[in-house]
Structures are given as structure tokens and as C-alpha cells.
Image (cartoon, rainbow, N blue to C red; front, side, top):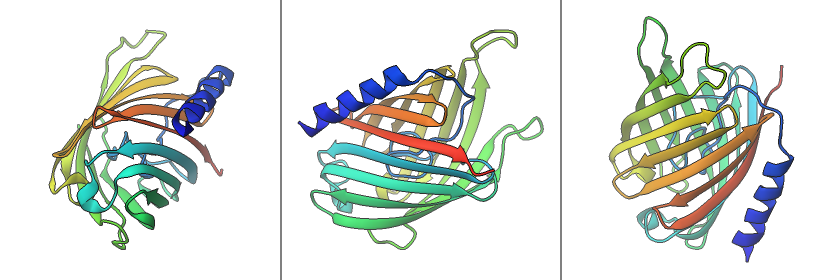
Length: 227
């Protein structure tokens, strides 16, 4: 019942959204900016602030880390400078009770004309309240449209290594932005493969996806700059 009601709210919000803005970082379902459960190579930008709420079910993928069953995550992120992001996530699941996760991400080197890749490092739950999860990523952006195309299609690919929630192994992910307001995301670790879709407009983002290819997930976030 809760899942159907939440899906209805997402559908109504999607209909009401209309204004299109350039792509910006969006929170993952665990809180830090990213895809579904994995991070990406973006932050909120200078003085960027975001709030998010995500809800999903798990059937064993993260049971070893104390997260299983119906799960909710409420999060906030702040970027004092473009390369740095700090955040806090309030996680609650059927098996974990409640946990407060402190998160941090640093873009060590951003992609540019002289630097073909972005290099990123971060930690989810740095105080180890639930499961300390350090990670490192290499990321690359691709433009799939000509410079004069009215609809710029872009692809971002991430690959790296993560502990904790990423099972001390390789993690990969990607986001295909087929429209300024719509993108498709996919990711994988040793324990799961997740798919998702994201609709964003005027800083508001609606997320829907499948955790481990079987459990429905959804969420909403809002991101803006303080200056």
C-alpha cells in the first residue's frame, strides 16, 4: 500500500513539472550524490544544498551489513566548494532500526580538456554507525550528440572500488541523459545490479528504480544553490 501511494505522488509531481534546467548532481538512494546506491563523480557545486527522501525494499543484497527489508533514507548534502561534498543520511530498515550516516566526497581531479578522466574519493558512514564504506572512482563523460543538436544526449560512466556496502569489490555505473529532464541509470557491484530512471526539473528530481533487479525503489530530492 505504501509503495502504491508513493508511486502515485511521484506521478502527480512528474505531471506538474515543466521547466527544464541543465544537469546537476542528484542524491543517490543512500544520500551522497550518485546513481541508485553507488556514488558518481559529481557534487552540488559551489554552495549547493540538497535534501532527499528515498524508499526501497531489499531482499538479501545488503543483509550482511545490517540493511534488509523495507528501508527509508532521508538525507541532506552541502558543497561549500565545487570539488567537495558533505552530507548526513538517516537510514532506517527492518533489520537495522535507525542509523545516522556522515558522508563525504572529494573530486580529486575533474575532467577537462587536459585531463580525460575525473578522479573521486569518498566515504559513506565515516563514523561506522552502520557500515563504513570508503570508495574511489574514475569517471568519464561522453557527448553522444553533435554540437548543434537541439537535444544534447550525454553518457557518464563510473568505475572504481568500494568497501562496506560495496562488498570490498569493483563497482561500476552509468547515467544516460536522453533529455535535459530525463535520464536512465544502471550500476552493479559484487552483490547487486540496479536499474533506475530519473526525472528532474528546476532542481526537483523524481527517482524510480529496481534494486537487485526485483525490488521497487523510489524517491524525491530538491537541489539548489544558496548563492
